[in-house]
Each structure stands twice: as structure tokens, then as C-alpha cells.
Amino acid sequence: MNKVVEVVPDKEALIRRAVDVVLSKIEGAIEANGRCTIALAGGSTPAPLYEAIATFDLAWNNIHVFWGDERYVSPDHPDSNQRMARLAWLDKVDIPEA
Image (cartoon, rainbow, N blue to C red):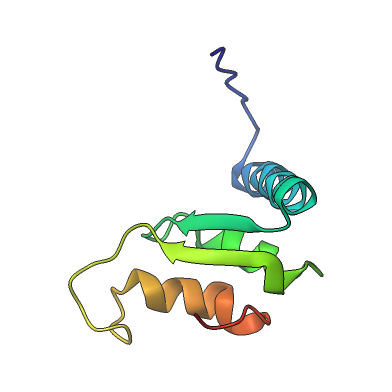
């Protein structure tokens, strides 16, 4: 597998590029498989990406989200990755609960 490294000038360009890539993958997966399955990353780094994705009109009922990383804290704790993902993205869109 060949790997490509893209260099972007700043954080905003990185977020825009990440959004483009993720949206392409989401739409491609839904088109090919009828659904998209995503494992969410934690920490503060993905928050701007999640916030941007929440602004798009996607087939949310075809997107399945799983926690890929969580800290041993309650879901409402400020350090919770679930809390971050919900505030940045999941509570803003109509993704069905499991």
C-alpha cells in the first residue's frame, strides 16, 4: 500500500481537508454498502472535525457510530470522549440510538 502525506498550511486547512476525506468515505460507504460504520477517536483533536461534519445533511440513519476510545470516567465528565463527541457532533444530528 502506498501512503500519501499531504502538507497543509494551517489548522483550518487541515480541518477542511479532513472533512473532505471523511465525507467522501461516509458517502462512498453508504453508496456501496447502504451504511457507514465509524469508530470515533477521542481526545480534543477530532472535535473540530466532528463539529464540521455535524453541519452537513447526510443520511444519518445509515451511519453507525462506535466508541473507539474512552477514558474511565462518567459520560458527563469533562474528560469523557463520549461527552466531547456528543457535544461536537452526535447531539446535533439525527443519528438513531442503538
